[in-house]
Image 1 (cartoon, rainbow, N blue to C red):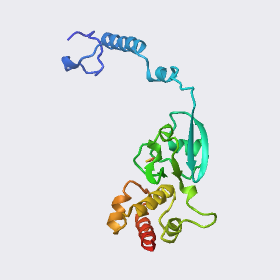
Image 2 (image 1 turned 180 degrees about the vertical axis):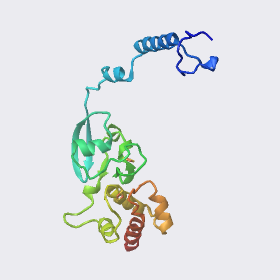
Image 3 (image 1 turned 30 degrees about the vertical axis):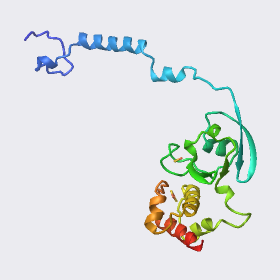
Image 4 (image 1 turned 135 degrees about the vertical axis):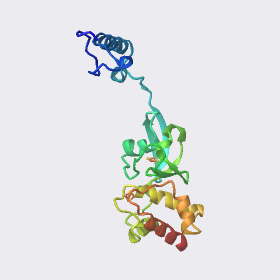
Length: 208
Ligand code: FES
Ligand code: FES
């Protein structure tokens, strides 16, 4: 071996097939830099001007019994219209992807995940949110039952659980605790308050 063999990246140089010379390493780095210059980085892509939608769309909704005429961005979900345009923040944003049920509302009497519904697709719809359940100071029976049965801990999932529970009862899916669990399975509670939730729904369903 020559006394002046070039240093290798591995230091020892015992395995010729793995030997990386200083010159090769510099050439590889230069090639990588040239490639990086030719290819927009994610930061550059993020800095590029995004396509904008200037046009607002006017829609009409009946929210908790009140007629509303709204000028909205056509990309807004019903959840975002409720929270950001109408300031009805009782409906919660969890996953924003249809997986947790925190955003459950009633749309024309049916429960939906409002994060998945574009508001422009529902012009003229009737919406009920958690703010629309109580009658003045009188809580909806299911709201009261959640308190009595300790159907929550942190409360973040609770508006969605209650809206889904109201629908579960009106749909008649309350024949047994297992049936309630199955039909409430789209509503996740990270605090694990499921026992109280099922008891509350079962109790209100029995009261008719
Ligand atoms: Fe809509 Fe999770 S926020 S399902
Ligand atoms: Fe905390 Fe359900 S009460 S997530």
